[in-house]
Image (cartoon, rainbow, N blue to C red):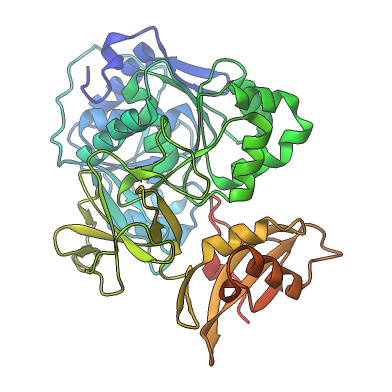
Length: 482
């Protein structure tokens, strides 16, 4: 039925998708998606109301079968953001579950209900051109209105096939996760990944440690999550023996979308004997690097480049390459390969500015490379690279050190202007005990002892909680000023 998802035709009775007590086999998915794809014939783009449901998965598969680029919409987006995305991407239809009440920003679009029980005659769908757009996924818009990254079919297939190699991913694997489906992590990796392999996915709907224990304890082999989820797992392990047992039996635990604190990594490994592996990707690039299933799950690293992907670190001039092996040699990550997006929709200026000579994409992420090629990300160039006293300092390693202090529950590190140092290091702390927060000089000494004196925070500010987005990333631009 489709070379993108061979199991749609070859394994009709095999489980494909399960959301709570609702599920579809590959045969049922082929029928429902095929019937919907026929209704999309001739559409330019299809917006998908991306709730964590069977309907979203069916709608996206249908769009791919029909060769219609899908525009996943975050159901939590405000009216202004949705209006911008609709005006920018100009979809012909919006796909959602029948009876869904959509916001006014979507009111002028033709509504097409997703019937997961629909059936239609089997047919062969043409293999899309590798360069044809498969998705338009909007960035978070931290520096202006969200930009639509156009992801071609080859980016999707090359990433998923590279992960097959890196993770030894097969049709026998059963993936469990509770990630949102408007983002590349939960949707492309977490739904399309299993379907391309001929395996199955069990979506939790809403993440819970009880759900993870239940699914991994009943046949699931892989878990995808973000650091916030793994932090909750680490916190729950001492009191939940069934969770320990379930994680111990998993084949692969994968964390992404932000750096997993080393402290949580080590707590999970100590309790379960299983190490979480990390990978590194972006909306614009899908996946770039990963710890391999047959490699060392080294805490604080995102592994090595995936097959077909080239990765380099460059100096501030954006051209001079930094050799691997110097733990203090921080550079910007640039990547090149079939996994890249083709353009920012309607933004030729932004597209041109995103690439260096030779087709290298400027990620804006800063990292160092170990002598064996493992990449260690230290943070975003705009918010996590601190230039203090002549040193380039990554916020991530300081955050990891702070999280090792028993009095720290959450930590974020930023820089702020300093007349003497250029920038001074500021630590934002959520204390484990709000009534007795650790003293600032105690935290500074704690970091200096573990890292180096010039990496100690000069200012400590205490908060009740850190601002985070839907993927659990800390939103440093939303931290209070001064």
